[in-house]
Image: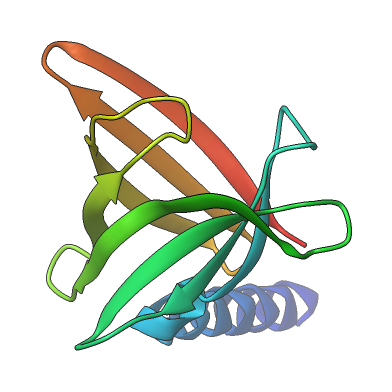
Amino acid sequence: MQFASCRCLFLGVLFSLCLNVNAQTADDIVGKWQNKDDKTFRIEISASVKDTYMGNVINDNYQNINRGVVLKKIVYDKETKKYIGKLSPPNLSSEIFAEIIMISIGELKITMHKFLLTKTIYLTRI
């Protein structure tokens, strides 16, 4: 009897987790984020035009720092459940291909690609 109730509880939790993952929408990326390793790097991602998103660097007071847009033309791909766009670091004049995956509602994984180089950073929601 106890085994059956534990199994039902486990299946219920698993089912609710599956619903939570599938319930994510493209707008879940909107908000304020900070680098998991470097807490001083903060970014605010907002909706832009025609189902695209952009990101600006913000300071400790969550105010926009005049460094320009660092994430550009971010588009959500429903099939792969990834965001794809360009990253433009404030200290560089070039753009880098960026792939953003929402690991959970509170965590993003950004993978940047430039030629053969790849770098991954993790952001947490603030």
